Length: 156
Image (cartoon, rainbow, N blue to C red; front, top):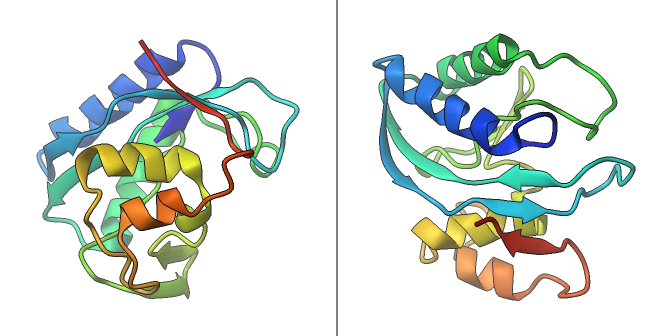
């Protein structure tokens, strides 16, 4: 999850609360929050990012709809691709399921292995978790990113 508009930390916390108060998902683990440099579209404020692990009764498509609904309720509107957003909720992994861009859903997330703002918080909660396509664990993927890109700072 991430936010770079308004009270970024509160936006993320509210996103977690909305996800877990629906009764369809249970929070199992949460990473620390990180302040992260924007990627792709650079002309915007830094983000607050985190990763959560949930148990859910929803299938991946139902979960995606729930996440989009939570984003909408938070005030997210479509703007510039990779641009500023009040709340961004993505499915990174769903067990070992692989879905290749069916109806806008790709699992595992198509760029997660290239994103420090995903891998660093993911390693807080599951460094040994193996990417179902790349067959590498999260810590390995994080360790093999270019250190000169994607600045990330633990948010206090």
